Image (tube, rainbow, N blue to C red; front, top):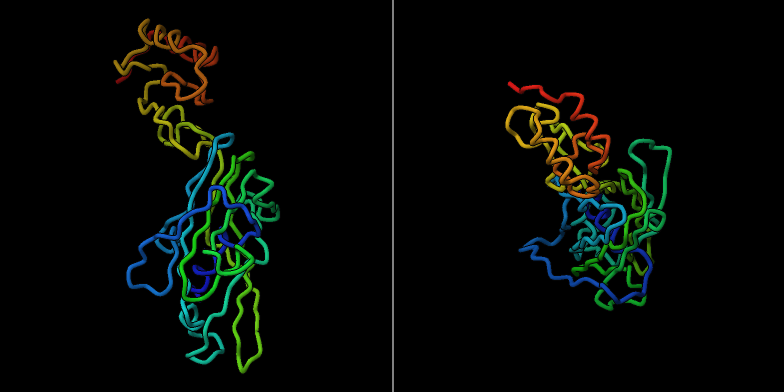
Length: 261
């Protein structure tokens, strides 16, 4: 069932209904000799790339579906030779990890999925067994948050000429949307909302020592004044709010003249 969870979670980005061709991905990931696979793979600790609110985002999900349904889950009640006909998405729900009673959709956070099923069916987000597919998760994130992606998947098989379907919900992908900033918790300007580190972290334990000479002097003051008004990637952001403003200047002045040991 664990393998089934991973496989079905992979369908998250590949099953939303869309006919868009612009930005469509290419199903060219090397799965080697595997008959079932997904990339990124949550079982290996892989997740979707984090997204920065207000900036263009794209990540690609690659999926390899097996020919036989028992290759997904050997405990399912089917014959060993029962083929997997197809799999498609019923719905996708984003669950707020800070409040699991709160849910939303991809569209509500500024994202969409563009499927590529290689033209195998009229529904671009319906996938046939024994083939490789991909999908682009793309858009411009508009909301901050950490989300668990719950994927409602319907699988289809044919037994004695009759089609059977079953819907299950899976959620093994995590999607983080936030800010660009210092993501190092040990830094004095750590930004808890940062999901992409911009290299601005100040690891010096001496507050206000922006030039790294183990003291807070005129040279630190001059560096802050030189970068005053910076709003992105600020090396003198002492307060950790993502910019260099009067707040940082006041913090430096409060420790002016101190030495670091």
